[in-house]
Image (cartoon, rainbow, N blue to C red; front, side, top):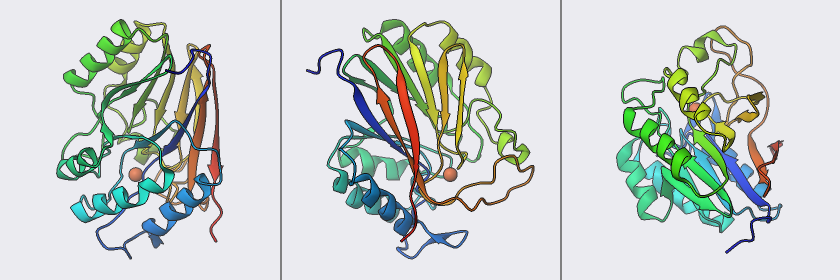
Length: 254
Ligand SMILES: [Fe+2]
């Protein structure tokens, strides 16, 4: 059991967009190769306590894509928790659960509780928190004995200032923030989906969007456009007093 004052270290990797085909490419980028590059860079750092995968893990929803992911993750030799994105498929998520990854729900780490919300809407690229997920959130906020909570979801709960992307945001962000506002324990909200860096604050809660392990989207672009920034991952230190230190590590391509 970790002492309450022990800082916790998390690594977020998001939007890996793997394919069944090892040579599969997203907008010309081999996504297995970029994930491998990110994992290699992560292994140069002290191992985190938990890796968070925040959706769009497999682009084509193929079982082979999920099996490739489960074959690559043991390189990090740490527990992994994940949530689905708009590109994921549930049969694939069973493969992840069967190989020991936590899928959704909540996880306790020291005196923090990590809440993993599913915002997937089948058939849509946009996100929605169904009543079941809002209940999971509200119950975790009301009942968790831990004093600090980090909430992870795939879709962004606030506009990124990019019309095409904001069209496929979380569509009931008002319900989400109403649930958060009923608690004074939430210290941070973390997401993927946006393939770009976002850091802001709302009522003392850190709001953190994280670039992808493959391609990035151009911030502020009204229409879909790629950015030229490299693959990335986000490191977080969760302190015993509820403070969060975080930084995005951009990974140069070999
Ligand atoms: Fe994505």
